Image (cartoon, rainbow, N blue to C red; front, side, top):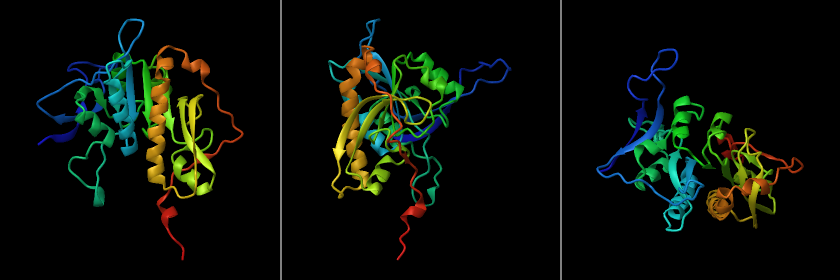
Length: 277
C-alpha cells in the first residue's frame, strides 16, 4: 500500500550559513512509491522551453483547481508545465484531531497521486522561510498561481516569478476581500457574485484584476457548492488568459481595483453557527 508522510528536507550536508550554522530546510510532502514520474506540461519562452508554473493551494477546492491545471498542462499543445506545488503542511484530521502522522493537504495528496516528485511538493510552515524561497529561485519560475493557499506571501516570494503571481478569488473584487468571500456574499443577500483572476500584491486581495466572471444568485445557493462552482469557473478563466500572460501582454490589461465598493469577508467563526431559539 502507498504510504503518505511529511518529511523535513534539510539542505545538502555540510552547507552552512554565514553564521556557521546548518542551512535551514524546507518542508516537502512525500510518499513511498517505487515509481516516480515527473509531471510535464507544455510551455514556450524565449529560450524555447515551456513556461514554468508553480501552483499554491491547500483545501479540496484548490485540489480541483490543481487537477484542471495538470490536465491542461498535459495536453500536447500546452504552453506550460506545473513545475512545483506548494501547500500548507499536513494537519491532524478526524475527531480529536490527533494522529501520529498528519495527512498531507488535499492539494499535496493530489500532486503525489499525479506523479509529481517529492522534491517538487513544498510545504513550508510560512512562505517567508529562506530555504523554501531558495528552492523556488532554483526552479526559474515564470508564473505562480494561487487558489485558497492560506498563507501570507511576502515580497521576497512575489519577486520570484518572472511574470508575477495570479490568484483565483471567489468574489467580484474589491467586494469581499478576505477569508470567507462566498459565505459573506450569501449572508449579505446580494443579487450576484462571481470570481476574479487578479495579480497578487502585498495588500490582501488588492491587486489588479485580469478577468472577472459574474454569477447571478437566486437565494437558493449553499456555500460549499457555490465555492466549488466559482473555482471551476475561475480556473477556466485563468487558463483562457494564460497565452497572453506568457506573451507578457496580460499585466498591461489588468485593471486596478477601486475602493468604492470595497467590502471585507471576515473568517466565519464557530460561534456564528449557533442558533438562538
